[in-house]
Image (tube, rainbow, N blue to C red; front, side, top):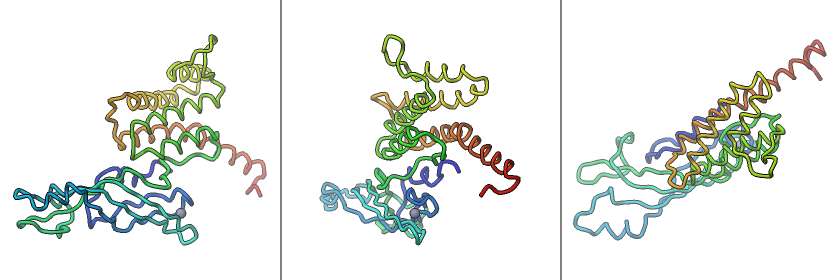
Length: 256
Ligand SMILES: [Zn+2]
């Protein structure tokens, strides 16, 4: 399990008449979400411009809604999406949505919200609840506000440190920064420096996203999620599997 590549595809404009990405269902995590064709609502300014003498299809824009559903018959979780669209020359859809003066045009849909949110990364079973909450929080704003999502990922690292007993405050009661806390966690065990480097990377992305003029993209946040996913894998999934192997070894067979 890793970060769902369908999320990166959903972060890019999707051309009309092209198949939509199929992200893993956030409810059952077995099925995939299949989306139907979006319904467009052209903006008022855009609609008014059609009668302009210099009108071109590239002037058309508006909002859209799209409905998805989990393809697992035992789940059928509904997903509702919304965002903005604009019209431009067709790229992949050769028979574009419509022709204008001999050229083919398509709509391009940019998702800003999906509800319920797609899970940004799988959460290992033995991860503490604080970590689970942090990933859910980041997932909710992944498309709407990538800077905020990266801040929430950094906060997930901080929640992990708190769960590990690394104090959030110094001796005088002042808040300690994430960098100092990761260092303390790293230096407490000789096996930790490599994972600490991954946590530092998530922290740097979070810092970049927190700035008021942040231009972090959803794709960059997903790259950060990939780094955090690898850290989680080494921290939780490895030990989960080790523990399971121990129970098999102890039972000299499947542990029932
Ligand atoms: Zn499902």
